[in-house]
Length: 314
Image (tube, rainbow, N blue to C red; front, side, top):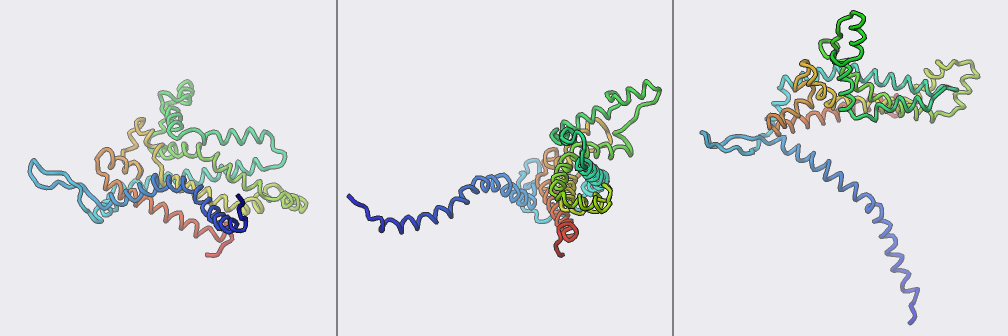
């Protein structure tokens, strides 16, 4: 039996482009399914819950608790909640401390590691990055035990010198103490991003500047920092988003001090409303407000910095 190749070729030519068209979508399907199941559906469900409320109907001792349409009542309650707004105020103080210090130290370490003939560069990179690998809860517990006067080695040394205990988790020292945990864990990650950007700068630019008599300080200030501006914007955006989502550090330190309440930051209040007061609708509305606020702040930051950092117009 013979097969006419000429009659089979058009069919092969028609099926091959179809398979090529389907291959990328086949690879994207698992990621798409995970995105829909674990991100898109929960977001839509939270948005749905934010317009609902649990109300008692029927009256008397035999009233029935059922879910009803609430409209924008939960959003009005969110924007008029003094505890929720006060949490943003504390978050602003925390961010003013954590974000500039984190980015400043990350940039400083990256510039130092990028110096010519620097010693122990590999060890230094690993040592600075290691705190980022420590989970936030573990880091908060480690620093919490260092902060407590009864367990802190610093207070033990001070007591032997006749100096009274230093209270870190009270008063004005509370915000720097909480921010210090995020700084300790975040500097390494931001440093790696900035350092990678520095390594992408051609060495010819550095050599030309040195021939012209520029010092290492001049090279860092006039060449390196302007060229890594996109990396600085990226790390700044990550730090800002992380600040708006602060939860683990104050929640872990809360049993160690009376200064941190259940609503110290917005996410702590959302957690309390959802799981302590069983008010999922109000918690969902607060979550939507926080998510939209984070999105707006990120877009505004990118719009402000894109011309200077990325060379794009407004």
